Length: 267
Ligand SMILES: [Zn+2]
Ligand SMILES: [Zn+2]
Image (cartoon, rainbow, N blue to C red; front, side, top):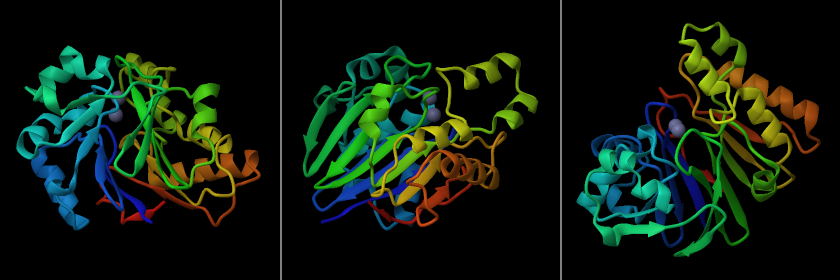
């Protein structure tokens, strides 16, 4: 029994998560070009012929840049909710996608895809109907969650008790406030429809992890307003203050945008 993953890319320049089980392989988002996706998959010994489907989170270009070209070249199935897959921005970015490739999964819906159970849940973001995904295989649970300014109680209860979390730890609030971005841009990032800060990430995890949680990957980190040291320190501090389940045996990795894919992480 296998469920494993590699984060190929994460952050505002592009997002791709590779997930593999005994019977299937999928991507969550394809936010880089086909060429770049091929190169990154190659680094983990895989290629796009192995990938059966791309599950799309939302229509921002850093999540869908490669979706159309990959679909046309490899016939890869595309999953997402109807609002996302039919919006103008999605269509403009992806170009023509064969109708037969499109499959729908709404927030709060679960589907069986080969030997995976995949559940979509809503996120709080400045996009049309954004969602992220919980992937389950037998008794293993993986939660993927980025691009959200807030996590409500309903979502917290859905994402509780996972073995592995890939979760947004976008910025350090002080670095962002003291940075030289335009004010409206800072407010967008900080808003309930923006991105989770390091501290937000620690607080979400404090409400979710339990004794089965063994690995956490901090994702969608800002290049300008965050770094590996600050993010890890902040998340670990928040967890150790607020969460009885936190221990140093949990493997926490900060994925920076400059990084190569993570090695395979077994769920
Ligand atoms: Zn994004
Ligand atoms: Zn986004």
